[in-house]
Image 1 (cartoon, rainbow over the protein chains, first blue to last red):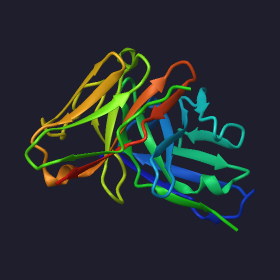
Image 2: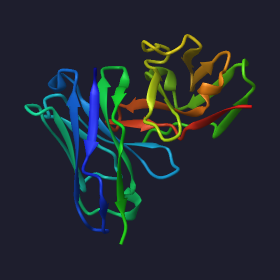
Image 3: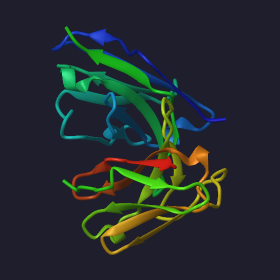
Length: 118
Length: 108
């Protein structure tokens, strides 16, 4: 059974940093690209970033490029999102999701809340 | 960047058919994926690559993609289908995924 479990969410001040983790199980982690998707309170889904199975290739939404860094540890089946220079508009539930080629995201985590506020 | 449009809401009587559109420039050249999100829950994929239904998704869910519009069709709508629905594509020009703004489906 595929499981994705996010952790690391917290209340952080504007300008601060936070690192999210996503522990994966139930599939061969290194074979699949992974994404982070966020959802601000009462708003729609916003794709944030993704990373190839090997970790060699990454992509970012314009809204986070230069501030967020996605990475993965295939030996520990864990996906990360390092978030720097956080802004109030980064407040959201962050989901990690497993990608499949030409198939979108077939599994999602339960989400973790990040609140940026003074 | 590539923009997707969806109607904010669709209302349908139980047992009837709901159609949710997803508009985008020449969207027929892209594979469109659809997600259902019930309140307080993570999204669930209900269709991928325009019209392929994952295992466990009822046959009532179907999809099409032509011209500038992709469509998710829910036949014989049930109360459990009340949710927000999002379309998604991969924007090859900018190497990023794009979600539509979402459509709230209400069973009257």
